[in-house]
Image 1 (cartoon, rainbow, N blue to C red):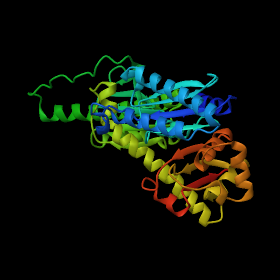
Image 2: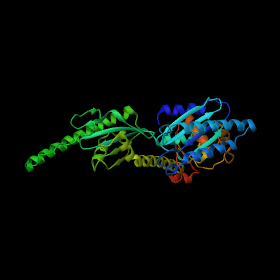
Image 3: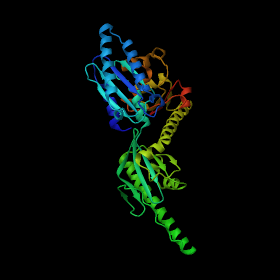
Length: 385
């Protein structure tokens, strides 16, 4: 997640507004079975959520009328935009005086359809999507080429100079993978072996040079992780060629040659590995936090401890179950005051917004995805000090 995205989120939650703010998240993924029918599941969930929001509006008749107008406008906006504009999920933030009016489309589905009417925007579902969509380099490797794609927030694109070629020895524009020529079948065994030895040396040099080139590009593009796709041992050889600081970015090595696929096809093939890479990363953070707590070191567990640490700016990375049922009244006086000051409708939303304001990383995960959360009331944090 880059600094611009964090700045946009911080500006959204800090924006002054009059009256309630409607936050609506729709899981519009056309591949979702619930969206295959005549009335797509996301639209049914949206209408139900908006109806509930009107029913829960405070402020008497005037408050209900304001909520009704907001919800009517939200339904109109979300149903009139095209399927492409809705993507695989969409978020709308809207208030009566339009001081808040923002529509965001994602190519990663939100966890669930969600509608909330409150004093400010609810952003934890958006933070969850951005965390899962961290900027990733997809490195496609064959014996003659290395191709680098940039994946972020579910979008993938071919870089202007994306292919490192065996013959050229430098990055060039991708115009399709090169095919090897037919070898001569009448070469002698000794000549064949000598040729193969030269090719092995040549490829070894190529892998090292390509590893260096990818490492430089990873730094220039501020990639947060790398996913490698290559046949057999070629992928591991490539990983070994990367400098230590970049090698740690490698999330997985997929044993497939995808060099000839389009960016969209390659991303679709690697999608399960991207999701698993996210899950493993969050589990490592949560397990580390739990070990620190047990060792009496720099870790915090439970909403109460995490809220206090966040208000003190001590949290490095927060992992929170978005489905926790913690109530503010069960917390300590200090934590309860912090949540009241934040003015958020739920403990989990307060945790996420406090993290954003103090430059802490945030990951949302269920207990099924991250079992360590079950041992800490659904909240774990790595502390800076």
